[in-house]
Amino acid sequence: MRHAVIMAGGSGTRLWPLSRQKHPKQLLHIFDGKSLLRRSFERLSGLLPPEQIYVITGREHLDAIATELPEIPRDNLFGEPTPRDTANAVGLAAHLLSLRDPDGTMGVFTADQIIRPTDTFRDTVRRGFEAAERYDDALITFGIKPRSPHTGYGYIHFGQKLDADVYEILEFKEKPDLATAQAYLDSGEYYWNSGMFVWRIPTIIERFREQHPATAASLSRVAAGFRDENQADAILEQFAALPKISVDFAIMEKAPRVAALEMNCDWLDVGSWSSLAEIFHPDRNGNVSAAQRTVVLDGRNNICVSETGHLIAALGVDDLVIVHSEDATLVCRRADAQRIKEMFEEVRRRFGEEYA
Image 1: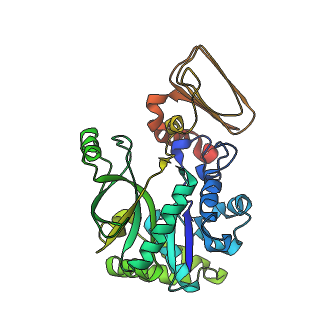
Image 2 (image 1 turned 60 degrees about the horizontal axis):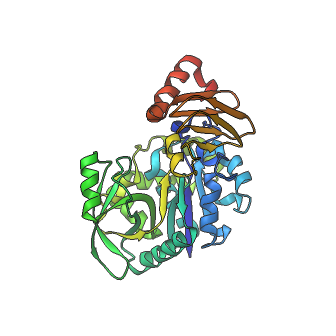
Image 3 (image 1 turned 180 degrees about the vertical axis):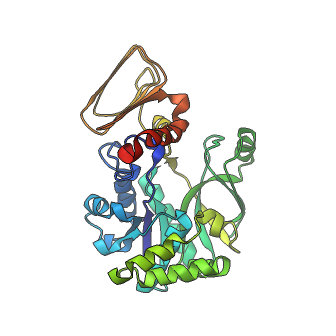
């Protein structure tokens, strides 16, 4: 049987002050009235029934996600005991699914991406499932054909074709400098790393056992006692002791066989407010509105954001990010949007967790 897991952890501090610990970016309703999580679910629901779709997230978000995705059985929502990065989220989900379907196939998807068109996404993922079942010793990922020498994404080096649409992967590359990114683009052999995967459940568990045997043993114990309230403290202690590491570093870069399909989609990782300029259509002066009510007079290239009907009025200003939330307002230059995490840390230093 095929299963799809949506990773929906993290608080997205680069989208502060709307994204908070209790209301993370994947639940923000600024994308045409739908959250990123909802969009991720709807993309997958054309491939699999809700009973075969899962979400792994922080325990504190389970109720909100159950409200956001009422179609998914509550038992399909996995609450991490504490955040320990993507390798442990993926490993825990794999061990939990193994208890239900030890010979199944598992896809891993994220809740913070805009992907269009949906039909192309579904067709590519369907072929990814088929590839994982055909090459059952391989870990399958998806590469996005780069549109520019982007320095904010990781890259995948495609090698020779294994068959009509599956390529062997030679290496993973971290975020490059501009000259290196341009060389990658010019070569035609490098793709953006989508952070999406498909593999047989026994295969990914075996890779954990080979590369991180202690972690695999802990994840197995955590999964076995996951629903037992009497073991809650022991589960938290074991999970909190796991090393924080991404699935790329922990597994993908070391795996003996990795393959990929090209996903020929418009793809955007929503990692900062400035990225909204690539999602929403600007007005004739380059202003982008992710808000119900915005008026910009004699201003250019501004980004205005609000989840409510709060009016944002900007007069005679250029190149700003203006974000309204219920209890905080952010104003910064677009060029400084990558420093919002720094601002968040300073706010927390001064005011504690009130605005976290």
